Length: 119
Image (cartoon, rainbow, N blue to C red; front, side, top):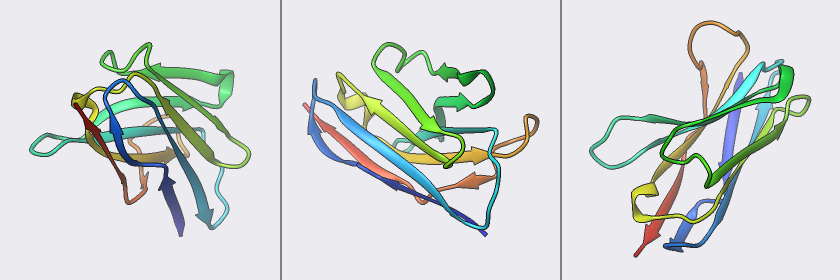
């Protein structure tokens, strides 16, 4: 069984930064990509960023482009999300995710970590 464990969430003032981290544990698996989604109260879960180990390709939601940076280590199945210039609209539960296939969906999810940005 694969487990993803997030850390680094918390309460921060608008304009400040936070760094989220996620590590996989459990049975050995070879991820092809890892990423982050978020879900704000009353809203659907939305894509934030992903990193694909082959070619080190990175993708971002328009709402975070230029403020958030994703990084990680495919060999260790770890991923980070550096979040700068946070605003209250970034308040959400952030979920780490991983996939082992290029097609299909994201099958592995963490439990989530709360990020709250105060004005």
